[in-house]
Length: 325
Image (tube, rainbow, N blue to C red; front, side, top):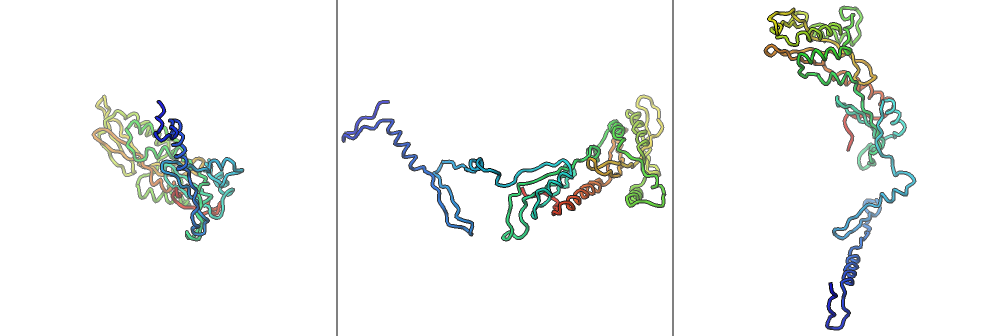
């Protein structure tokens, strides 16, 4: 591109390069950020703000400053503890008078969280807020057996699936205590089971009886069920005919209730949980349902036992729910 013609008044002729240089200098002169110190507010010192021309970007210099620190400004991060003893030891190591603990009682993923730098207690004008960034969490490890039975609780099972399930999980079933039949001395837990039997009707059966049932169910998987009769013992009597031969088989007796002996948490205490068997006859096909009786009671007891241990060992307040985000 040719240079522009010289002006008529004899002034020096401007070149393209000089125009670009002048324009660049002009932009730099008018795009200088300015640091302005404001009057002191509420005794917190004089705040400073950076005033920038429109379109310019301001970036924090904190990352650059942090590179030269000998140590972090404050403790941050979340420690994940794998057992309750480690969680308690971690909390004791770092806690102060304002630390707090929160427990999440969700049945599918219970957990407990400690916030070391929690806000100071008291009214807002008297208590200092804190960052709440130094945390420790312990996720209660639900046992494999607990999760397995929770998965099918109340869900419809086909005849074959129900038979296979009973056979696979027979190790979780326990025999009813012999002394429930009429011993003089019963524990408080035994008395509750006795009362439950009176309420629900029927009688508990042991693992051998259920194993026999699962085998009988497998034999009748292709059968056509013709009738269901409730017996005075609380059992259900199923009448059926062979699918390929028009022969009636021996009635199959199905108990109405049995006992699980499983922990809520891994390596935790074992809880006796009553389980009811339910069925639905549609035409000649049976659908089965396995329903745990009030599992929330066992779950709450297991959580409360660990929470009480945390309270006792750490001497910190424990709140049910979730902390501020």
